[in-house]
Length: 185
Image (cartoon, rainbow, N blue to C red):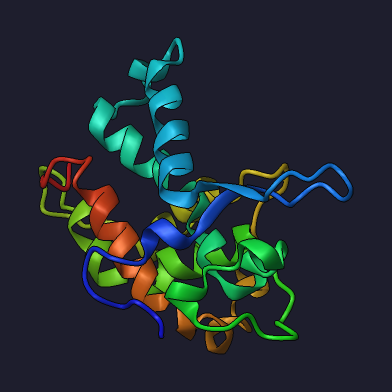
């Protein structure tokens, strides 16, 4: 039975996985997605020059941590069936809709988790808020970390394929938001 209670379930998703080696007698192993995302965020805030981005370390860490949120999807988790998060998503399906986790990441950030992320986009000194196009550029930069930008057209057709992971995307964003100040500036 899937674990959808608040604060539970995220530990079952893998960010990096090593399948059992054929003939070597090794078990499969995973690096949990949340741990991977926090590892990458920690490295980002320590990189030389990261202070010049105009973000404090908590803001930068939270944005960088969100880079792999698209790995929550069944399409990504099914890439290593023996590491499938059964306690979170139920039994591994025989087939999943193929997708790219960077595309799914933009979909989660731009559409699924819009309300949780709205406070990040405060207003400037003149009371002007962020344009939707600016928000989308930011999410495309955050999630599009594999050498090519994510096109808006790429993710518009994926909405129906990520519903199973949406509750976990909300949890993951709330966890990452704890890294950032409440201010939208």
